[in-house]
Image (cartoon, rainbow, N blue to C red; front, side, top):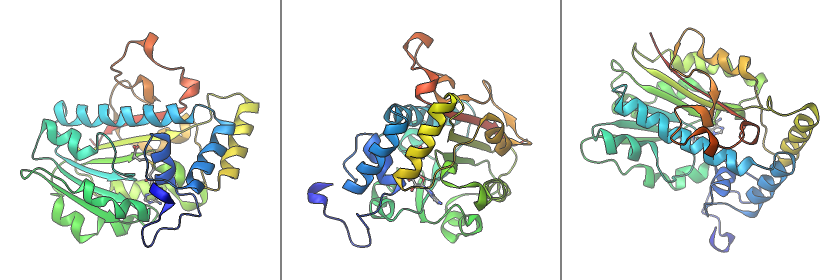
Length: 271
Ligand SMILES: C[S@@+](CC[C@H](N)C(=O)[O-])C[C@H]1O[C@@H](n2cnc3c(N)ncnc32)[C@H](O)[C@@H]1O
């Protein structure tokens, strides 16, 4: 960030997930503490920047598919991150201008930049909630959400690279179950999640230690733990796969090694 000058209400001395992710994606809205945290993670998982880029590419493909093929017109994007190339409303409204999007994040820096997320075309709508996914009722009962989305029509609930910030003692499955309560039939759940399953034991230990040193609580989950979030839903083909393998645009030989990305994803329909 220019001259490391922090907007009011922002603590530049402590690393935050949204700012660290912004650094990995090549953005400028981050501080030294975020970059140091990012470099700490990279000491244990050197391709983390590639993982962030591939995760973002998945998000674009999933929103494109849901809008163009599945007819979804409403999105609840929790853990939005800083505005970036291909925000959900930009991707969805390029295909269906009437799309309505509610963004949610708990990082104060995202709130500062939220205006860039509130640039809906006139046919659609966007809203931003400053809320914490660990208090899911504060999201699903929020008046701005109820004003923006039609709760009787399908909604894509997006938790893209968000739930690995919710540790096991914070009831991750209960949170997603509560959020899923509002989804009418024909809705979708879209998730990605970091895993250490592709690494060997030494790699796992290194990645774990590096995450601890980075100062941001982080919980990787294996395939079975990730799949549990989708219990009772109909997974769209190709099911639960690495983000690089979900309806890819590039041929297999041009895609990175899955160990270098280590992110599960899934898109599922509410029956
Ligand atoms: C890695 S970024 C992902 C951004 C975007 N979804 C994407 O995939 O490109 C994770 C985001 O989740 C947000 N986040 C982390 N914990 C959260 C919480 N408890 N409640 C709401 N948002 C949270 C962070 O602030 C950050 O913006």
